[in-house]
Amino acid sequence: MTLAIAALAAVMTFCNLSALTKKAEQPPQNAAAPARQQNTPKPALDKDALKRELVQMEMEMTEASMKGDITLIAKNTTDDFELTNPDGKVQNKNQALADVKEEKNIKSWTLTDAELVSANDDSAVLKYVMGVVLKTGQSGKARVTDTFVKKDGRWMIRSEQQTLIR
Image: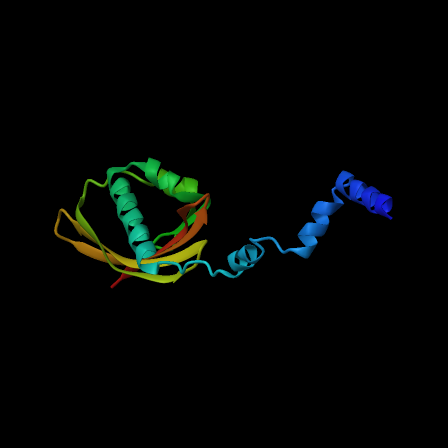
């Protein structure tokens, strides 16, 4: 009998069955950890911080556009970007970038009334009012609605719709 037990122990050790048996008898110390990690809710999206980030991005892109610098605009728009101008003209990314020229007639611009309409981890919609004052004193406003998508960990504009406010 002792020989049989010794043989069984040797076989179990050789085939690593003793370790498997111990694991089956005693749950691992971290057995509950994966369950907690799976059930741990993701942190809530900080919509105020996201709104600030997107508004800052809009301001930087508007400034670049006013200077005629398409580099930042190209970097922050998706390849399938689409722009609908206040006159109803729809442009793809290349067409929109080709229209960007230094604005010599604009005295000042403002971005106001920003509102994060919707947001989740990979998409967001921001609307705001863009005001422009020309050097001649004339002014105008447009409602702008931008749709963002998150690609490779950063926000990019997928589409923009501009509508004149009268």
